[in-house]
Amino acid sequence: FCFILGVATRAFIEFDLMLPQRRTFGLALFFVVTSLLCNMISYVNDTLYCWDNVIEMTVYVAQLVISESLRERHPMQLVSLVCAVFGIFFMSKALLTTSADVTDNNPSTVGNHHLDSKKNNGSSAPAPKLMDVEKKGKSKKKKPKKS
Image 1 (spheres, one colour):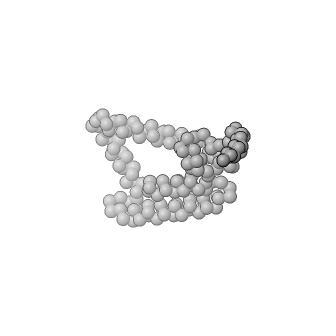
Image 2: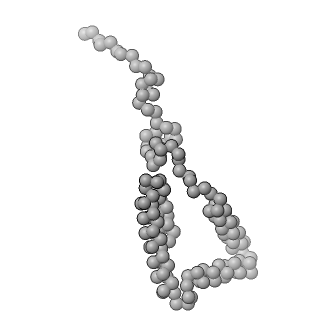
Image 3: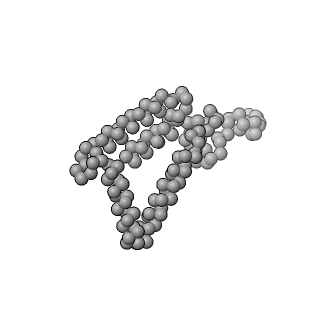
């Protein structure tokens, strides 16, 4: 599940599928990935022998991990439990408070971030334009050598 969602997220970011002119492709990708994930969850639900569905099994496993962590009190299990609680908290906070508009407002740079780093040999400064270089360097014409 995570791999498929990671690939889909990368496609959304890499191809700028949230831009208005590409939103149709973004919606197509969203619905295709959602269909695939729902089909996979349905298959898992149909092949479970001990549980009615995945959600019930997940709740049971979470309860088991929490009760074992609190009963046994192994240090790494407690750290894992605390990290899981913080992870859930911060993920909820990010999803509820973050603005959906995270794109660059400059249309000349949208989708070209990977090109800038190649032109500048990895530096983050923008590449100088040809006209800027000519203005700074005011080249003098060399006189031809007499032979």
